[in-house]
Amino acid sequence: MTTFKTLGLEDVFLQAIQDMGFETPSEVQEKTIPLLLQQETDLVSLAQTGTGKTAAFGFPMLQKIRVESRDTQGLILSPTRELCLQITQELKLYGAHLKGLNVVAIYGGASITDQAKKIKKGAQIIVATPGRMKDMIGRGMIDISKIEYCVLDEADEMLNMGFYEDITEILSYSPEDKNTWLFSATMPKEVAKIAQEFMHNPQEVTVGAKNVGANSVTHEYYLVAARDRYQALKRLADAHPDIFSVIFCRTKRDTQKVAEMLIEDGYNAAALHGDLSQNQRDLVMKSFRTRQIQMLVATDVAARGIDVDDITHVINYQLPDEIETYTHRSGRTGRAGKTGVSMVIVSKSEVRKIKSIEKIIQKSFVAKDIPSGMEICEKQLFHLASKVAETEINHEIDPYLPAISQVLEQFDKDQLIKKFFSVEFSRFFNYYKKAKDLNIPDLSGSESATGGNKKSKYSIRFFINLGRKDGLAWMDLKDLVREVTGLGKEEVFHVDTMDSFSFFNTDQNQYDRVVKAFDGVFFHDRPIEIERSDERGRRGKFKSGKAFGKKFKKGKYKNDADASFSAKRGRKSGSTSTFKGKGRRRGERPDVPGTRGKRRRR
Ligand code: AMP
Figure 1 (cartoon, rainbow, N blue to C red):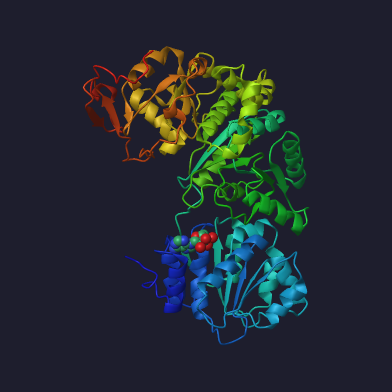
Figure 2 (cartoon, rainbow, N blue to C red; figure 1 turned 180 degrees about the vertical axis):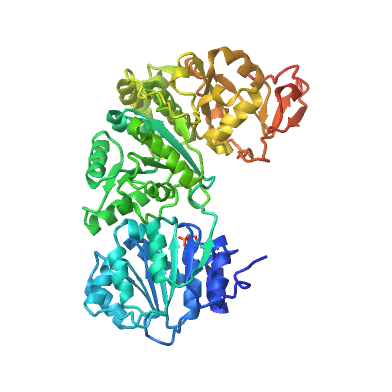
């Protein structure tokens, strides 16, 4: 097994690695660290943020520099202030046991004199954004004439941001014979040109991109009329009550406008773009990190370097001009082992771009429908019910309880539930009561997860007591439903997963088949419950502890080739038999003579 030790790192670094809790080297580290330690070479590495690339160049650089000298020996150029600070912080941790190490961050929007003072003390490594670096070299505050190692980090982003000239100028002050290590998520022509111009026979390392095309990110597109873009955005947000998202617009103006409209409409939103002062941007990012902001509307440039791991959705309000940029956008979600969704709101004139993006990310998009007003209300309602069920009671309310009870004493439980929900729901119901269908027919021929609007008319919506807490994303749930019912890809649609439950649609005439197929089926040890979603509410089943309690165990169902959900068919005797989900055809399932007493029969 490869360890950090076998990669050739010295004890001072192994100690730091242990302190940080890294157990095994990541792919890019495994491929890059030994190479850079053993050879004096230029390097081009295709690797994303999140793959561990900072350590991949950081450790070799730290091990190779002479810490007893005060000369600047290493320079790392990165596109944004955030990334620059992040790299500096990481390098300090990697070199925590290296006595005399001085790593200095150089970036715009902070005092240049303070930075110059730090450099004067002797910085073996400088991590810088190109603009400020060029400025300080020009003013004679920094000398890079003796650097031996230069890293161009996120080279594609630096070029996207128009730093080509700055980089060229900076490098002209550095020695010809230094080693240049270039890291980039993509390899557009401009990056290849940089490699050709500034590097000599670079070694190449490509890593299975973690963020791009990784299974952790699902790509969806929603086809709407251009004038309905904003309405579509709102519906997507409303259909995902726990959304924590970055919304990308093409221009600063649109970014500001969309953020303002969202704020006006009552969302926790803010804009992030280059016209804000550094102070304002810091404030926005702080609020976003602490989740006071749920929807961060950003330009591509401003969003670079956002290092927030839990982003659930990236929404492309508009597609970027350069489709390669899509990779960076979608890479903001699905980080740190989490799953994420990258949604594109697309108009007819842009829909062909989806195909080009698919080629770049090497993954297919799923065409989905913008949820209808009533679907959104339904989602919000169930979400609230879940939240109520899971909320810990706050006993500070106790002293007021007698008085509150008196005010509400004339109502029975059903009425109270209805009243509480109405308080919360009037906004949604009133707004969405007459909301129009925003979808337009998709003639692009892409796969549709939802079956398109044509199906909605005669379809039936089911509630199922499985959700994200069972480890099921919507695609897993769709697979599961298809598995159990034997229905085809197009026959199960409008699949929406919530935390503890989900919804899906089938054609109306499949109703009996679906109900029968799920009769007595278990997900692990739990009976699967399925009902028409419209009847569920009417029959007042919200109280079911099963569907809304915290009791769910994590499911083991995974949507990969050899995983299966362990479903059991219940028998009257109580004995169960397990069957494998994948590869089973309907005819092969054990027959079920009866069901468990607990199950609701229809
Ligand atoms: P990067 O791709 O350099 O932005 O790194 C992403 C994150 O992964 C950083 O927070 C690193 O501290 C962390 N990291 C880097 N290498 C490893 C590793 N081998 N094991 C665990 N975490 C790592």
